[in-house]
Image (cartoon, rainbow, N blue to C red; front, top):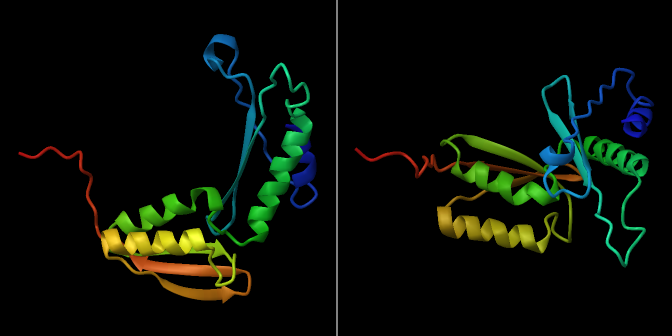
Length: 166
C-alpha cells in the first residue's frame, strides 16, 4: 500500500489505497497476491491498472515479486493509463468492442491508443471485420489526437438470451 501511495502522491495529494486481503482458508489455493488501482476523474472517467505476482516454484526461487515493487509498477501503470487519455486497455479491448456492439441501439464511443501502421494493430482490425460479419455493425474511425484512435458505432440492441419465453 505504501509504494503506490508514494508514487501517486507526487501528482495529487488525496490518494486513498485500501487493502482487502483474504487470509488462509478464504484465499483458497492462491499462492500469490495482486494489486488493482482505480482512479476516477472529475469528469467520471475511470482509469485502472492491475498487476499480479508470479507464484514461486521449486526451480525458480526469484519468481515471487516483491510487494513494494509490484505496488510501484501498478502505480506507474495507472499513471500511464491516465497519460493515454482514457484509452481502453489492450487486454480488455475485445470485450469493450463486444459491449459496444451488443448494447442498445445507441452510439458507443471507444478511445484506443494508436498502435501499428494504420493506427490499429492487425488483431484489432481483423476483430472489427469479424464483428461486422457476425453483427453487421461498422465503426466510424477518427483520430481525435495524434496518439489515439476513436471508434464510434451503433449497437444492435441485443437482449439477453436468458430471458424466459412465455
